Image (cartoon, rainbow, N blue to C red; front, side):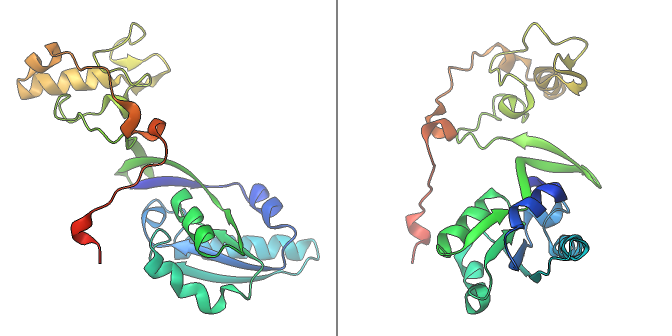
Length: 222
């Protein structure tokens, strides 16, 4: 899932400061799972904004609404009947949701209430960890199912750097060396011969470095 963190209240207050009528838009997908932008978080942020503005003697009207997804036109279109009643949309979706809502309602300013961080997994309640950077050319078959792009601080493709020590990364002694994890996993699988295979220089044109990406499945188009 996509993991995000809510922006500090002070930053959000500054963004919405000039506006009196705000549509606060939540998303029921990834940001709900990581407890950042679902219905409950929309309610909490709305209360914080109202209290803060009231304290300053500055009235504000906030409509709370949570869509199933903000990255899908089918759901975004549901706010069309009332979106015109508001000066600003404050989105609690990931960056993709914020942009798609802005593309759909071009006359409305859409601002983010969260910082989108990474594609990750839930390790335990309240703990999420990065696992994928969406590079567009997966090599997990060669690395025991552990991604060196996301798990190695330097995204090295053929073994650890000279900075790792005791199985830990040089950037932080609490962070596992990605390549140590890969080697341990290959040993568990009895596939250490894979470690000897040289992974060629990566073609980054499939990643973000190749520009904005688009995927088309002709068999699914209407």
